[in-house]
Length: 85
Image (cartoon, rainbow, N blue to C red; front, side, top):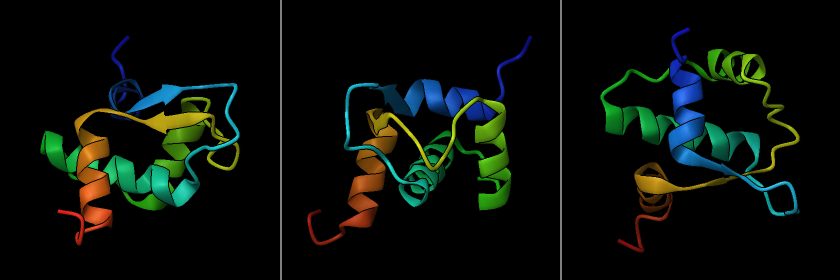
């Protein structure tokens, strides 16, 4: 079965950590997804479609135990805090 691009996003741009209290919120997760999609040359889906895709992947966007990682994380951080660059 082919992996959805939402699952690819989770595999490439996030790391699961069940022991943490510091996790990504829904808006940050979507922002990370947009950065990931742009780096891959994919048109990002709408926030509503993204949330539905996360639900299909078993991710509750309101109770996430994920951290960002990889090039998408760097791109997201730089775009979120342009004064740092």
